[in-house]
Image 1: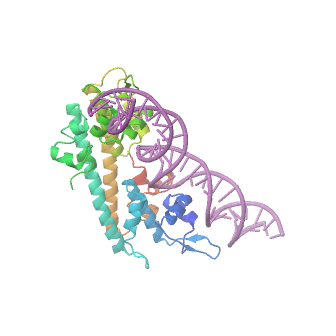
Image 2: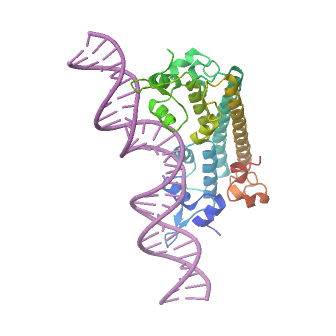
Image 3: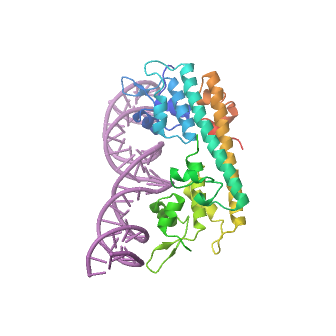
Length: 146
Length: 146
DNA sequence: CTGCTAGTTAAAGTTCACTTCAACTCAAGG
DNA sequence: CCTTGAGTTGAAGTGAACTTTAACTAGCAG
């Protein structure tokens, strides 16, 4: 089995056929066509789909994922090195997101102690007036300092 | 300033007025009305809004948040203890979510080494055939064992 | 009273990520 | 040749979480 049908892709990736067609329309994955106009996928497209689903779990939009995948070569099958680069970048995104959630958790824990949870007013969520210039809302959580 | 107008709420919570009205329609927050039919919010409603936004950051739907907030008393201003109970439950949700993202990160890191990312086929994402009966897709990530 | 700002409503519109539908084609088996 | 199963399309529908719009009212300064 050289190329995969859309049915194969759906079963092996756990993603609905309609979603795969949608991803293709949105430029996230690609396929060639048979004489009878049916899609055929190279096996490495499964990795793209895997990457898409993993990135979605992290809360990344399809638009951002599309941009990230654009870093992969158009004309040749991506190598391990190509995927490694992409995955390393993504690992950083994941780390940032985990850090943000840990901060959120720690602040919530703090708020259990003080009984607050009052956004701007709460020194645990917004401990520094300096943050005020960044805008309204719980800045430390929404726009964490990098 | 005893009660807050919707404008005050919007500024102090960083949430648009239209969103506040929406939350009220959906039963997430409450207000009283003036003689002229304008909304007036008690200050503790700011905490509800804070909680809503924090929970959303964790990826919880408004429906789930509504159910959680239902644990707060209807007839009296929530006490520190009320908020502490709610926050403690939420902390558990946050911990679970963080654990899931750490697993995701570690698996992605593993895949940088092996260059894979092939869903079912990848032993790092789906290391045990036993998982197959749970359905298609990268089960370890989508339905992590509790 | 005139303006002006801040608030009210119901209803319609928006974005994202898909799914569903209707009508159609293609390839293989009997 | 006929049926069946898998595939195709564009268009419309879905649900979540809001936002926008239009037409209206309330409260206050001058």
